[in-house]
Image 1: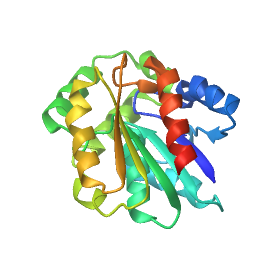
Image 2: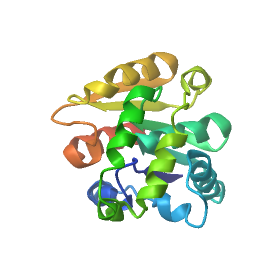
Image 3: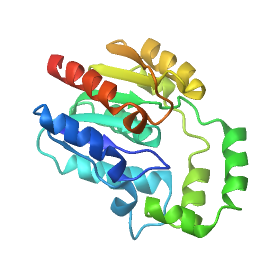
Length: 208
């Protein structure tokens, strides 16, 4: 079984390092690909990012334990919907069931005033980041999420009020799911409370 950790829109693969090390210490090896490196050379959009992510997953001979945060959760969910035979288990962290169009449009206006240097740590240009953000406006997987029957763990930081409703809706939609609210954490659970995240992941993967 191969475990893949998928970072969110404002993160990169290194934001999983602490979690990866703690999992490794407990006998669980995990890969954390850098999404923007995978899509390098393509005009960045959600579709291009998903295609690149799918290629990575498809190259693995064994079945997959997918764990994604936010955008990473959407990608993992999308793959699980389209490739049920490849996915052993699914973990969604702070994953929206529907992108709030008004909020996203406002954020894109704000991003327009952010210096280009602020996007370098993510390994993506400002232009590409805004294009990707715009391409996510109409994403919505709630209806198809109901078809997922692999074991699923839905996580949300206790302080992540924006995505709490989404977490509960995913849990209700996916018949074989468990909902865990992570205390002392906001949206970025992998950075805010890695110890509790690792505990929840280890328990879930040990059972599945």
